[in-house]
Amino acid sequence: MIGLDTNVLARYYIEDSGDSEESKQRLCARALIESGRPLMVCKTVLLELEWVMRGYYGFKPNDIASVFQHLLSMKHITMEERETVVSAISGLADGLDFADALHHASYKSCERIATFDDKKFARRLNRLGMSPRAFIPGSEFS
Image 1 (cartoon, rainbow, N blue to C red):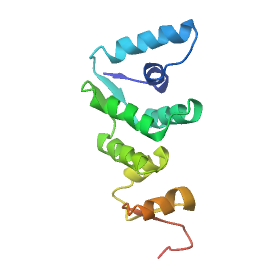
Image 2: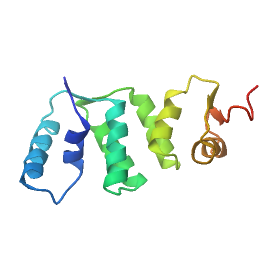
Image 3: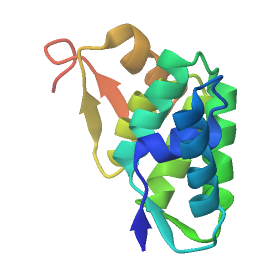
C-alpha cells in the first residue's frame, strides 16, 4: 500500500496553469492514482488538502466535498477512519468549517465538546442539533 501526501492529491485534483514541473507532477499523480494500486489517504492529508483548495485556490465547500466524495468512491483507496471522514464531509455540507467538522466527527463518543470558538463552531453545531453538542467553558460547564 502507498500513502499519498497532500501535494500528490493537489496535483491530481487541481488544474493549475503551472509550469512544466507542475505538468509533469500532474501526469505522475494521475498515473499513480489511476493505476488501481492499493493507496491510502490519512485524515491529516485531507485536512491539509481542504486548506489548500479553499485557502489557496478558492474552492467552495461544495466543490471540496465533491473532490472528497470522488476520492472516497475509488475502491483501491483506503481512507483512514472512513466513517469519521464521511461524517465530516456531511458537516462541511451543513456549513461547518471542514476542520471543525472533522474535529466534531472525531468526538462522536464524547458527551460534549468544549470550545472557545462560539460563533463558527459551537453555535453552528448547536443550531444544527448535532451531537455531541458544544459548550463554552465557564458559561455552561456543569
